[in-house]
Image (tube, rainbow, N blue to C red; front, side, top):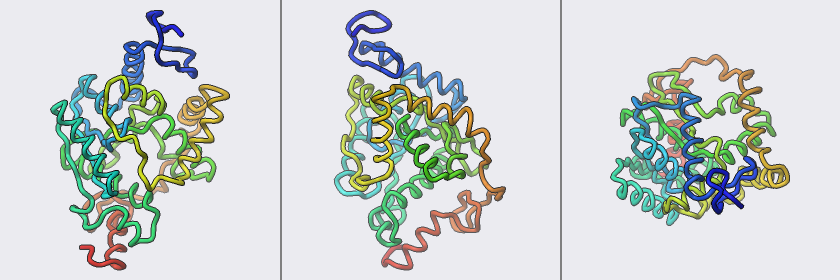
Length: 304
């Protein structure tokens, strides 16, 4: 294979784009894709302070590397979930990345801040760990970004993540979730931070290649609680289709964003308000996060 740009030996083939690239031109391709998404969708600009949610995995660390390299003002947020060796290694990888580049990093420990790790919380309220984890991360990310004075919160969701979520929501016709699935979620309340997904058009394979070529040391293992998750099943099914028809995932996702999502109504008209307990934005008197921890306190002691 020859590089599309320089005609030298290609290292990465992108069948969905009918292209192949050498190392340097592949890295240029990824950077241009991210910058194009940021500019086209007005995700952020030079005046913004961007907090990047970093798990220690390839996508989030690569995103932080990309945004920093493109000249945006960034800081990192790592949420310590308390999932044994997986969480310890994740924190080590994230801290080493930030230290090597002299970038500011905020670490929030769920156990230290709220009284229990995610596995303990999930058992206490009899919910799947991924459910309790997702709710907790969304809450903590928004709160930490507000407290840090960030104007934008960036997450490392890639095309495979977005398409698997879209597929699951379509399979079950979750119209509320479909209406809220977008690469940019504006801040519709002073208590909400604008949320963006600059990697939404780049595949998991492309991000793994980027991390490898950039020498980014990331945690390879999946979260142990992810085993058996429906999202992984959806990814496997979509990969089978993609292998036979390259570009299908991007067509499916972009078709949704351009044709279906504009027709969906986000929300049921409920007014946003501040939670009576914590002051974060919710539609009810008490937010879902506080309600979750209230349940944990009732069934498991001691949880402060």
